[in-house]
Length: 349
Image (cartoon, rainbow, N blue to C red; front, top):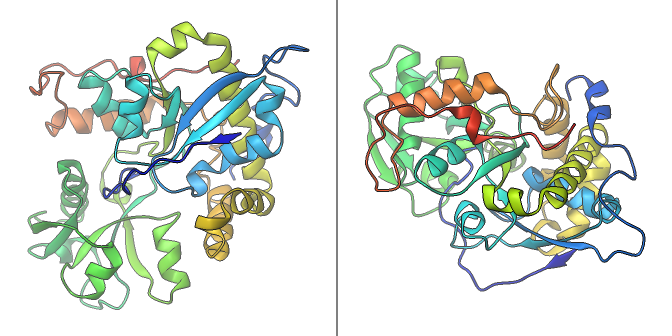
């Protein structure tokens, strides 16, 4: 695997805000499958991260370390996170694949970007509405009415918070400020009362630091489910490179299946591949890998690993459409809800 370094600034937005039956692990492609041909040079494939390496990306690093990409005849280059979102890199043909969650794909493709979901990393939403665990006055979402929300500059984040509060019987009205520091720092300084976080990473870090959040899952208060983290490609790339695309997704599926069955070993691989960024976060990586494997994030019962959940795409798509979050290529609100089945594809089987 090749690594490219760029002098891009750190993304300042919380972009991805977003083991069941292990028999499903066997649905991934068997060892040795792929498009490799004896004597053929490996096909180059580029993959864009959305943030610093973390457990959302664990299957990619496993696929490299365990030889799944090599088996598939691929030479995968990881493009580090930067100021340009993965969706824009993929749409522009500057990356063949990238990280892109469900709601991001639904908004980006509607607005005219050439992106399509090809693999779903997390089967459920990892986002949470959070307050400091020490705030005894904030015991349920409706307690947040009239307080200060730390947002990230995108209207959808405020809508997730408001809808969760309303689902608990509150008005969902509050003051919103855009964070210019870490969420925990803003909470601990009293600059904000609540914000959003990621259950499989930030929440765990706060527990490790001894300052846990009190967290609420949006879906417990009526917000539709979504597959909040996934992988994207473009229609243009899939049409031009169907064999490479299928080989990449099959190798990635094997990587995440391995992580679901062997989270400790997968965590070792992720840390070893990123010693500079994760070498001092071993406990966080191991706890996150274990949580994602054991709590149904990587594998959903009754569905092939990485497969789309059509019901979730339809329901959250309707949430976006009804809330006015969808705009076309000219920035105008769309007046007809898209056919969400055109926003994802399955490249295996």
